[in-house]
Image (cartoon, rainbow, N blue to C red; front, side):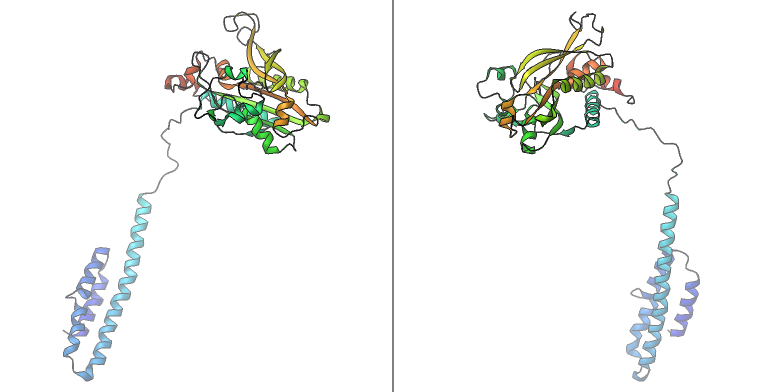
Amino acid sequence: MEIENVKEELLKDIENIDSLNNLNELKIKYLGKKGLITQLNSEIKNIPNEEKKEYGQKVNELRNIFNSFYEEKLKYFKEEELNRKLESEKIDVTLPSTRVKRGSKHPLNRTIEQIEDLFISMGYEVVDGPELETDEFCFERLNLPEGHPARDMQDSFYITDKYLLRTQTSAVQARTMLKYNGSKPIRMICIGKTYRREDDATHSHQFNQVEGLVIDKKENHVSLADLKGTLEVFMKKMLGENTRLRFRPSYFPFTEPSYEVDCSCFKCGGKGCNLCKQTGWIEVLGSGIVHPNVLKMNGYDPEEWGGFAFGTGIDRLAMFKYGIPDMRYLYTNDVRFLNQFDRKDV
Ligand code: DAH
């Protein structure tokens, strides 16, 4: 077999390569185990010594011709294949889409977002606290020492003697005061889940509360008037601009004086109906001026600082707002109920 003949054949074959398959066959034909170049290479042992060098060079030259052709074509075919793929898998973004059902916001979350937006707009900070709370923060630091009768109103789920599922977001008041170290004014709300051992149409063992706390220097006179104004804005926003508020003296261990706040019944406008039990009023909030003991226990000097606090159940607000008759609907995940809220926010 002559080198020149193989070269001629190779140059001719090269002309006809038009696919990756061809190219691979070509490689077998020339460089495979019995390939033509491979054979030429093994011939070298039969070549007289003085011709070996020239012969070797020629075979190498042939191999180089093959290799450079092979590399170039391989690259070319791979690119071509990729381009073909890109072309055939192209996505037409202008085609109309298939509609995906996206679900809807839960009425509780709608209510929570509205409350957060409102208070943020009034300069409040939204803070968070743990749901698994210590007796210390849930009760003691709020002026409810062990054995205090007011603890009975909040029968809870105790995990150990010390830990319980918090019965009120008021626990976060103490946490926030300690965080601010008695040195800065506070204007915060905290929204979160709370737990009590009760379960009927208007109570669930798990519910949500929003807690508000405002503390400032005494000379800035944060007063009952500020509390009233704030709660009026809050309730009008939630239940309608015609809502009127009524403050009734009440008792909470962490405030003094304390007030229970009623809203004019949004169903009958205050005339009296089955919702408001013919009174024209619906009880919605607990509030008051922060008790000096609570300030003191949590690092704020009551001689220097003062303010107000309030707390309310969000589930009840959502029920009033959306006309939901049973609190348990909020938690049972019935899609027939949830679908009713599949609408755009106003
Ligand atoms: N934590 C009270 C409750 O769960 C509500 C409440 C009353 C919160 C008065 C307050 C407050 O911050 O000042 O019934």
